[in-house]
Length: 163
Image 1 (cartoon, rainbow, N blue to C red):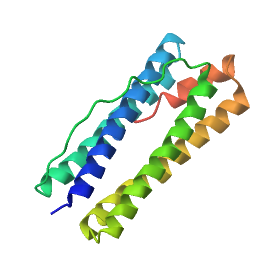
Image 2 (image 1 turned 180 degrees about the vertical axis):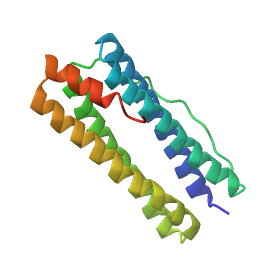
Image 3 (image 1 turned 135 degrees about the vertical axis):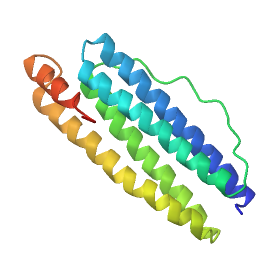
Image 4 (image 1 turned 45 degrees about the vertical axis):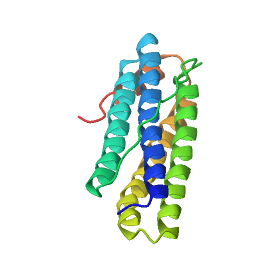
């Protein structure tokens, strides 16, 4: 059984995960407009991953016999300036999500909700990977710049994600 406090916190984090998915879809559309299909594909994979994260959390709450309350998500940011700008925002966003997951874990620990702390361990590990991937791509973008053949080559390599 989840406390009402935990149910509400999970519902909020589920909203945050869907909001993240929507942001990554916005980023994918930006890259499509910039004729960078590899980056667009990478962001579409992120979009799908964030949806899966939301559903994993949702299923956990349902499996515990509790209720998820869905709420509206905001319109995602879409006024990106460059590929580097997108990945600076991606890294900042992933760091924010990490903080949110840590807060949720801390709440579960405070409530002695051992099942939730165990489940949230997966998300904590996932966030290490998410931040690492965003940071690596950002570093590479800073090396190659936002224009030219090096960006096209990086776009091609990034587009192989999931293959």
